Amino acid sequence: MIYLYIVGTAGSGKTMLTHAFNEWCHRQRYDSITVNLDPGVKKLPYSPEIDVREWISLEEVMKEYNLGPNGAQIVCADMLALNAKEVEERLGEYRADYVIIDTPGQLELFVFRSAGKVIIEQLGKENAILLFLIDPSLVTTPSHFVSQLMLSATTQFRLDVPLVNALTKIDIVDEKMLKHIIEWSENAERLQQELLYHSPSLYQQMSEGIIRVIKDMEAHTRLIPVSSETWEGMEDLYATVQNIFYGGEDLDRK
Image 1 (cartoon, rainbow, N blue to C red):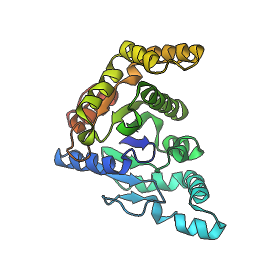
Image 2: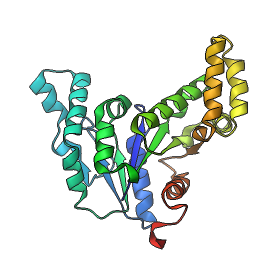
Image 3: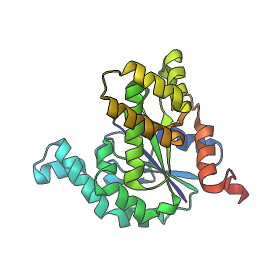
């Protein structure tokens, strides 16, 4: 099994991409299942084979501990870490090639608390890959783009597994803006020039440090443009996962 963890900031399109990529896999006759790890989601566009809401209820946690939604989400995240073994046991009932995992809406609950690391280690780091979703509305300037790259790099650093960046919702992005974002992702030198041009007020030392990091992680800046509506980019996403784990060979050729 390959475990594809869909992560990203709130509103980046994690749930919709989980649904779309799973449907795409089925259309291509690839064996995939979905897992929902968000105990607070009220409605899903897909029917997950495994749903954390079966044993963790956000509303019940709010009532039991007299907490608001944010505090209850934190408690639920910690409870998820404690139930990692149960997730593994439930997955043992399936024989899928791909497990597409929809993580909590708030990135910090999965990445910066123990839940994400515990789940990944329980299921197996050797078969895990992170898909970090970047919302195009958050990367309309070079500095905003770099901020998302830093967050993506921090996510990989925290969870210590391979990571792929995806630019979501490209079906609703202005064509000119999309071209700029793709160019920034493919050309670190151009990104450096525009960062210095658009952000001259940044402290010089900070600017130089950020640029050095960008150059050092140039491969990390690349991203896959995808759309959950048109399914554009799904084949590129699949090919990237294949390349990371099998050098480009399909599972059915193994």
